[in-house]
Length: 373
Ligand code: SF4
Ligand code: SF4
Image (tube, rainbow, N blue to C red; front, side, top):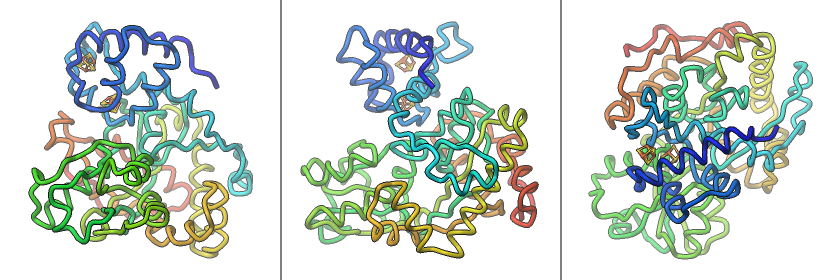
């Protein structure tokens, strides 16, 4: 699949509008990079697209977003442009056993985070994606066709505050802390601040993508970071003097969901159901043969087996729908409303699609009632 020329042409148009406006320059790394240029090559536009993590902030803040005639929707367009550049990470057919048994030919693409992949569901550039509660609600607000079809994982100790040459949380005062803004990393840090009665003004926040945090710690650009695995464990293993100051258990136990494009489901219901069944069978494998599952993960991510084995117990593998799944979605929606990033209440009936899982594993759908909006 190659990027349609119109996506790059549209990116060129939008960046020209944004470069005149510059209202969003403090939101993320895209806008400062854009401001260093007066015209944009295709390479520049792909670079901006990869700096964007699809948080949606510039869409909500933009005075030119639809229905304005300028029709500015930067996250949607950069997701389209990003689709092409991520092809380099494509990993076709390596899970052929799991998917082929269900008659599926699946290509898996990985990105900077699961949540960075969700915007690809907009315009159906991918058929399914896996990412956080927050990213799901954000992308549903950009395009109501992005729906959650299963609660995939409960993240028990998946995020940590890791610091270098810092004895404890008290000693972190006055230091630079790396956060991936607009993601679970930021929510976790806010939770740490609240739980330990820290003063947010005592810390210099540095906005970084999760994969950048290890190198930034090693270079001394930051003293600590709050983010998800595998970056905490990778950092502790490779950067001398680093350790976990606090993990997310009891502070931010969020979830990752399986998402699909509603329009695609409606036209491909049987394929969509078989895909959900393949994911349920993957969970069965994790439950029944953890060493085999860890070996698959290590091979897929080109990661040492010992690291994959250490990481896997930090997560519960669900593939279900429970009242807890909905509570987590509600927490994300409430946060976005409180931050002014979501104007209307979330319509759970439109966002949560339990039909596919009901069809495949009826006993795994245990919702008693939808939360009030
Ligand atoms: S997204 Fe909208 S508000 Fe933000 S810089 Fe671009 S045009 Fe301006
Ligand atoms: S969606 Fe978020 S990360 Fe992407 S350009 Fe807008 S503000 Fe930046």
